[in-house]
Length: 328
Image 1 (cartoon, helix red, strand yellow):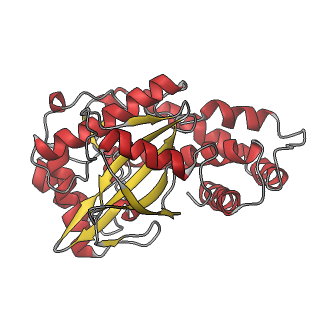
Image 2: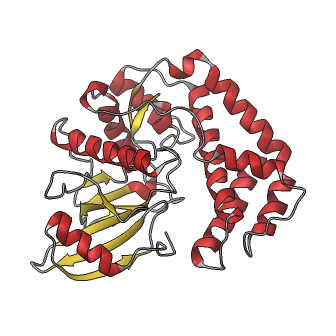
Image 3: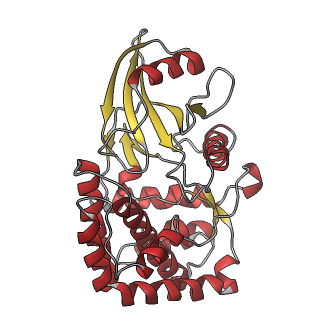
């Protein structure tokens, strides 16, 4: 996240780390990276470095609509990451460091939650920058191992095929004829969405028809949800998979569409490792869902009150790119 979270002070964060994890903070630096969460690099008074994440409980629509539900869902996801690493032996899973009371996530005020992770000194991937063929092969093997874990090993809900903020997107589509007063990027966003309203509505209908197919729910495995290059870090001789807040039970294609190249090598290798065929319709379903989900998030952000900040600029540019992709 490019902008810092509203209502969170570094003093409050330092106190939360001391109270929850016994961490005496010697230095902390805000890290404007990733999307969906806020991050700090923290050095403690013993010389150990950690990666600290703060989540806005009002801004994780895939987990729920109320703060208690979202906090419980976030904690379940982080507990699952811990179980996958410790109990299932998946060493590539980057799980959190539990707090002194054993909880993986602790509240930070009424609206936010804090999670502490080990700091990886490796080389992170970048969203939109493809992995090399050997790295894709390694990631496919990781997903095959993840999908092979018994779903009973974790306490996770099934991830239904929906959007984080579908109601906000549909409301925006209904209100294209009236001004959007949210901020400097609201009216440009309205103009872009108005030009693509027909295709967006058709994609929503297509997603719903595909999701209603019984085959879409026939196979359920533990999925990461976002195994894209931005969530991969090469730490020494192996790659690690981070950001497990989207983990959930779903069809394998929820993950696989993100690792498939035009050659099809990755999908053939996955089938060899698992004995499972890959469903092309499922790949298209989750590819469409991803674009529409992004659109719902960016529209919600830009219709809300905002200023001209790096975060708002990023949301506007991303909305423009997402609509262009849906129009192709």
